[in-house]
Length: 335
Length: 273
Image (tube, rainbow over all chains, first blue to last red; front, side, top):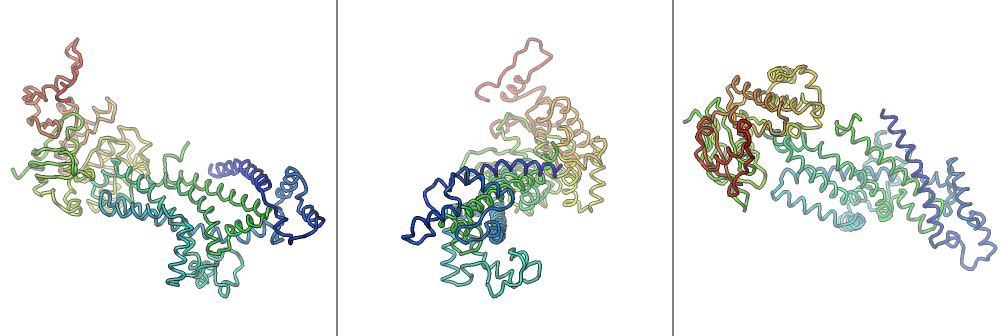
């Protein structure tokens, strides 16, 4: 049952990916800007320019280019990056783990903080505690993630130099690992010195990404918690003699979770998008900063590969989301 | 009388910075007595129940008066003391669907209160839940305990809630329109069931309803409310035979009668509605 549902969803995502591929392919080629112009020195002769165009296939029509690219892509070859001359696939896979780890940590921080604020706000509904929570979430929502990033650099990197402001790990420490999942690998291999170092590097970008999301989670969860707390079962639970904390955490939270879970899923995809700026600010070596460089250099094959990677991540997040509803609500399990 | 289970004395409640919802309500409930609270929507009958249970909506406050339950003053207690004092209180709610948590099995919703109030072990609470379901005439109780609320019928859910309400041997049950959300045939069964268990356990019941027929069947005495004020308070026979107040008379006149052919429906006069 479950396997069939997953398979069906994955099949449904094929046309989506094809659409994304066509759209980005055309878009990056029709907007002004020229990868060859970025490479050649001023005053290069026309013959050399023409040779470069031919070398990257840019002298062909867009549809011809697309067919060549699609044929190779189906075989797993997404071309060679124009700027770095490395295979796009290899380049993305070497940088993807850093972004996945950053997004995962940011999502955890956002969920933990958001749920905590929602629960506290609900517990003190109609009192000063709720006003404080609403004020904090409003402030977190109003300031965008990159501004948080810059503010953190000033405060915790410069004024109180507690945390590293750039990179992913101290290069003298992070060696001897065999994958790019530095955080996970160092943790399971008991090299916790590296784990703490990686977490210290992640702290500021992850929290900067997390704060606006945490505020959004807190808002949505708090309003559905308020609705659940007005349900008769919550009142009955209080009549039974359970404390408000118990009623919120053990009764209402699970039922209030579904709208929040769907919001969180959608917002985590934005989080992945948010890494583009945040990674650049913190010189964090993930696919976000790679994407900015690719766009600046008009590195067409790399842009194409990165956007497809983002699309696959979005599709997988949404799939995980759909599956989580049934786990949360027994009424959705059959039929 | 100090042997009253419940004594509400001059109770007033109001929305903060807003209108007064209850005006100097007084009523007494002896052990084993069923007392009806009747009135139209907004008359304050459910609000009295919620005052007694200590689950007032956030902006509503008790502004004066007191509630003595088993000789203990409930008004002014801290939330913690209030929970402790409520050990012999229970609620049969109006809507049996929303009163059961959709994501928890029946068994955990029945046993949690027994484990909290009676300090029973898992196994003891399970055995007691089975016994209580038997008391409310549910067949196949093991199967029912395994189910989620949405897998039971409305009448079944209300039986589960009644079983839960009686499980900890409460001295007072607030029944908040317990039959309103049910269809008519089930209403009768549920009413009979509450009556049966109430007699068997000697429990006092504060029965909130807008249905005078229900009052006649189940209550010993009645308080008629209008706009948060008591308009009449009497044993049930007196109310039905000799309604004193004009509002009570209007309520009776508005009840359709099948024994008067050609009778039309009469709305409450405008100054009461």
